[in-house]
Length: 322
Image 1 (cartoon, rainbow, N blue to C red):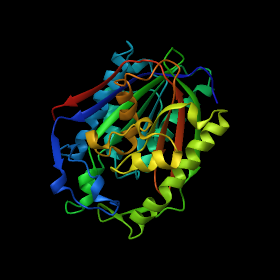
Image 2: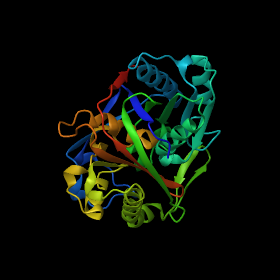
Image 3: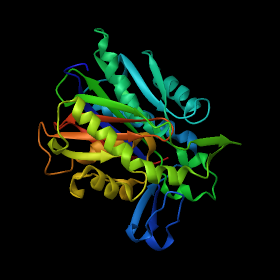
Image 4: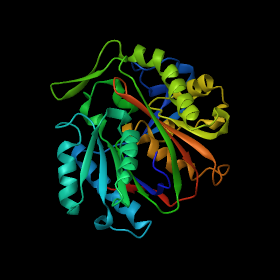
């Protein structure tokens, strides 16, 4: 692992179109397991057009840079999380680069919902080049537009984007990362302009995710020379309401140590972990040098967990009228 690299700024952008999902109207999906645990109310955030994700990406990068008095010309590299090249976020990334007149290398990552943490890992690895001093990592989600309107999975999904800036300056220290495979899960497929879930996808995730969470977090701690009890907070990628409870049970920690943001934001795909990091800034009981874990996950792809050491940094979630 490359030492002394920190996450110094994080910004996220959401459309200002908010949808409130009431418990009585909540839809059962292939991932539902216990309706008794449905929240009374939760929020989703939606774009009218999938292409508008570019606006959110431009905004969160600009905000993240502004917070540390930087501009895009000072970046040595940009990593952007994609899904299904030539489909989701492909044309949008080209537009993004052209709008900002970006001249540094832009590296795409195509690993589904796991892509945010994979992009962060790849961004960290750029510092193996001594010439690399500053890297931006972006993750964006406009998945709702790639599911058929009648698909109940739509009721889980939001549109949003997030950006983290990495450098050698003081900030949240990147301590260790661990990636494991999730090839034994059922996969999503793309047919006739829409994502189609296979029959076994829901049961595959429900049955296998607890073991993946356990293996990823425990192997990360073991390799970093830490114990699971050394971790102050965990954010386990939570695209549905039951993940935090399952995570606490399998990790044998109290549920108040599992940060969940699903009810507030819905599922934000690869951007979800970055939104959670921003939410940590509002926690009154996390202090400098406390350890926390971000767990990213994608079925039939990878699970990447990050061990980080806390420090207060500038963060913001911006709501954009589009």
